[in-house]
Length: 417
Image (cartoon, rainbow, N blue to C red; front, side, top):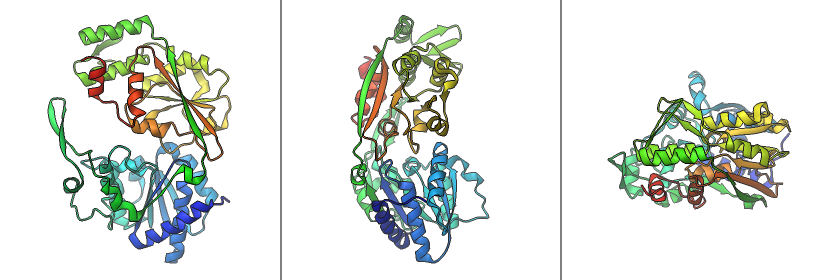
């Protein structure tokens, strides 16, 4: 039976009161502080308030399901009947059953704008049909813009923005609306939103940091450089000059600046998506470098493009896995996860180090994925970035560590376009 920490007891007490009063709660607790157990304790206390056993639907990412089920089974409250499901499987939830409480893990993933994502629409439909209490969980509620809050809560009856009939009316009140040019078209940009959004959410939000929880771990980052092959250098030079290159397997075409940026990003790490849509491994130089440099260490690898897993597998073979449970249980295994799918909701606590085969343009990916090893007892987390000489990766890194996405305008500046 899992025992809650003192701060989890206090947060769940307050959370149950907010749930009972407002019908929803936002637990903005940083990674590894125990959002899952705290949310279950809040549900348990809400059940005591209402005098009823509660049906709880816990929605999360697919890779996080195993760890969450273990936590919930360890908590084992008889007043709760909990089902754990991933967002992509919401359509499997039978319409004949209603849920007293819906818990949305990594809730910031609902925050796309100006139009709601399919994920947000699916959650909204479920909550409205069942008239559920809602608990939102995220260590980073608005990682890129305060405007991301609207579609996380728009379907909740008592949300603080309910007087705005849609995102556009919300944006008129809270955003400085500008325009940006994408593919030759002027598009309205709503991302510059006021921090007063968070003020409106504060009566429903309980924030909690790792420092408050007693975490003393330090993340140390190291940049390693892998030599770029002459063939790769020549290919990049040909693309810069001609915007097209021919390989035996197909053509590489860079007829727009955004496409050129993407191809350079791929090629610098040894893979490319050809014009025919097929992914191609140009070389396994980075994979070999990682294997040799970290020989004898248990590492977790993050990669960007799908073909990079193929490059890693060509070097690591069947010692490589994409299964978190297998990695944590087997000392001989190395794990490789795509950044977008592995940056949230999982623990890589058994790793000696995190190693980045490549880097994502997103500052959110940087800040969330690098924290996957953190535990309350771990004092030092080692993160390594493997960049190619003369490649694009160092330029991306210099942006994301400042919490700025690497954009096309950065690329044009860096590559003199």
